[in-house]
Image (spheres, rainbow, N blue to C red):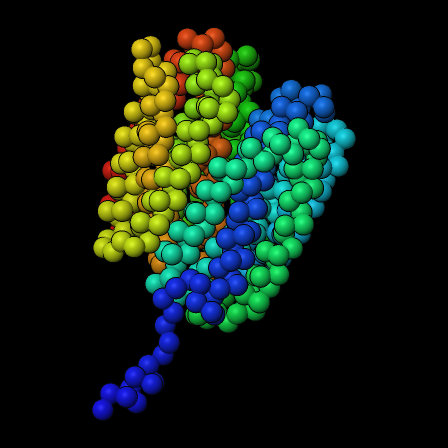
Length: 461
């Protein structure tokens, strides 16, 4: 007599490609793929861009402009998503991203190109935060780990083919067509996501009344955080040139940064409070440790070991494969999340310490390849768990604010670690032996950050 009960049992989808989620999932993955492809391509074409626009230092500045603009957009879009829903922030982000690519492709001066990169950053930051909120609102909690695994996997193909495709397009038609060529691909992604933007939420959210629900205060906090990060990095990079003014700028930037973070992050985050507070900070620890070394591996292999640029990038490609594998495996794991976070951080720590060997005399530089597969695995396994856990710990009406907080710590972690690493390289020197020393110093610093994440993982419970 179980027939009627079975018929009355509500349908719970077990696959992210089930009919009700198919277009949403494909649209999300395609959108992330396009953002990732653009990011991977810029590194390849920047030398050509800098030469044509007569701005040799454009590469570093363009990355900073993109990240800082993204950071600001994360906060505004997260707040907007909590108050008005995620549809409009996502659409606005896509429009800004496309406009930024069009401006970059048409840029005739360094200033206009930097403005274009900032517009792209605003669009990417807004759209990605809106997608995170969409995942939290539309998909049942049991499917979210699989969605995040798919999002991580969306970075693999751009990491493997993006640089080669960008180099081919730039060599045959010009670097401008790298930007122009992505624009038409946005149309199918947007077409797939429009129905998902109308899907009913799996849970209703009352408007948040907390301190992170005040538009003016949060906008000022985002401005302070972005401006403080920029001032801190600019000052740190000039410490070896003009000590006193650079030190003043660095301290002032740090003060603004702390002020902004205190208001942008969940309560007690800066004191590593248990639960959501530390979970959000974990994302920054992972990003700082991984990208703080990842950005300097090609430099070390080319300048110290004499690798060709195409070979030096292999380690980064294999890291993306490891990341995808780790994300997939975490989606199939059960048990306490803090243990998965600890395992991921431990893998990153060990991988960084192994990677130090790649610049030592008598040791092949190819050791960076297996080391970075392990590092990528740790990032996919641990960082994806952090995202899933943070959304699970968030009240429904604060999922936008906490998704923004995750992105803020993510971008700050990578931006600060790469910026400080660059300052250390400039301080130590650019000769091969000095770059080797700088890489070792940077790696030990980032390994300490990853080890700290291992120790703090228990506080995410």
